[in-house]
Image (cartoon, rainbow, N blue to C red):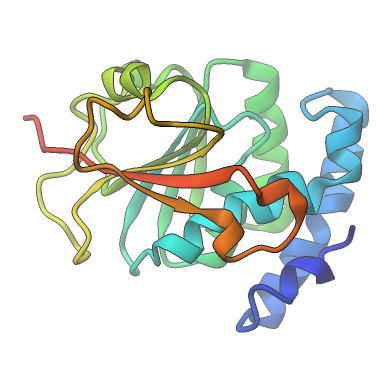
Length: 211
């Protein structure tokens, strides 16, 4: 599955954005052969399982210019890097506690010449910054994740949607989200027709500012 497969779902990409998306496969295959951060099967389906999945957040929420977004537990750079390609005027901060993953992320950022992304080898609790939105891909159950990111949300909202978490998750989330009455769940199968997305969702959870 190639990058062109992503283009059919995102029809307003600039040539620069298309070129950057095309480069992802080359960069990840090269770096993955040196530092294994993505499984072999996932590398072969990079655009389906990683790139398009990450970009699912953009089907639920459009980041305005000047927005600051934190990607927690970014791994090889997902969802942060595909979102940074889509939103060049939004600033993305990517964190992961595993150094070799951040090394790959930094090389991919450099290879794509992305100027709106920074990567940090640290835990989110060590980051002394605040953001409009926090994104992630199923790194923990929601109560654990909410605890991790406590105090990381800005007070003022740039968007009509209140600041908070946009979380890529799969499966039955009823029990996990029982505590969060304001959480909304959007199935990615509403936008993407591939079988992979049948159980995949974007969870939006507004978070209150804590000074």
